[in-house]
Image (cartoon, rainbow, N blue to C red; front, top):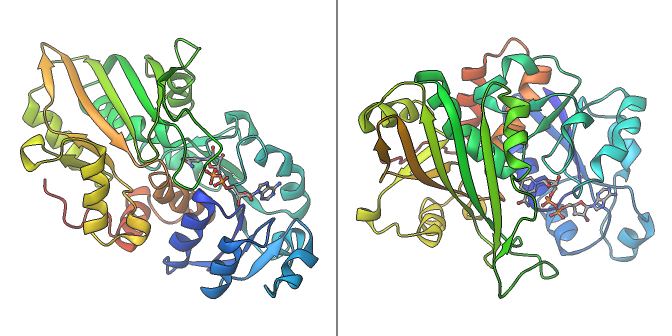
Length: 338
Ligand code: NAD
């Protein structure tokens, strides 16, 4: 059993903890939480062992038992998934080195924190036995999910994408905008170079806009392929990847609301949509392919984190076997319409 700990039990950490608990080859040792809030209380009610890097007395005063300090957790795990807020995770690296545990960071950290950025399909093999890994952000994961099969099957001359980003997660009330559209001041945005941390061979330019919504980012993607391909051939290339789910306007899927509703119909934990959702109204003009895709920002990196742990600590498992184990445990690909 691979012993896993989680540092930072928020949007991403709580989901990774649940996903780890579902794996037959992994054990969730515990999670580290700073504050004794409703999320800590709920974790406890689920039987998750809590540790803290904060003030232990805050937990005891509220009657929430604590298993120990954050460092006690580190002493008992093979790997820690660092899910602390953007920019915080890198500061923990020396502690992970001190305790000899492996670590997986999230996309809010720079590539350099681990020196190896990860996507399950694109570079699983290079992550085998790695000491440190970084799972790329939700937007980058979604872009790689659809670009990697295109690159493998047809080759990519250049990709361009416009990213309409959700302003805040559903539980966040301090972020915005709530009544504006905010273009990213950087043209191109950082997302293209982030894709290149996993697929350095791809030429890609992205721009981003923040929109007042809390669920899902929407991407418009335009790809100049090396060779011409029919719509059927593109769909066939994507079909092999269960983390891509196809949707149709003709089925009433007009936007992100229907995709999130579909995820709730599937009965997923928290109504999560792990797959990158792609509309099937692809346009192909000579060798230029255009499509829309959407990504549930809270959920899409969760399967990649599970695979990252397996790549680091179960080197005998192949990429496709790990993906299959993870997807089966999270019901990914079940009920797909293509
Ligand atoms: P979050 O704010 O929901 O959760 C972070 C948790 O860490 C909170 O529970 C917070 O109390 C705790 N925390 C704060 N300081 C800490 C510290 N010093 N030590 C330990 N815990 C601490 O954040 P999140 O959205 O889950 O993001 C975590 C990481 O995942 C970031 O790198 C982010 O960029 C990345 N990410 C976020 C999303 C998303 O849409 N939310 C998607 C993909 C990747």
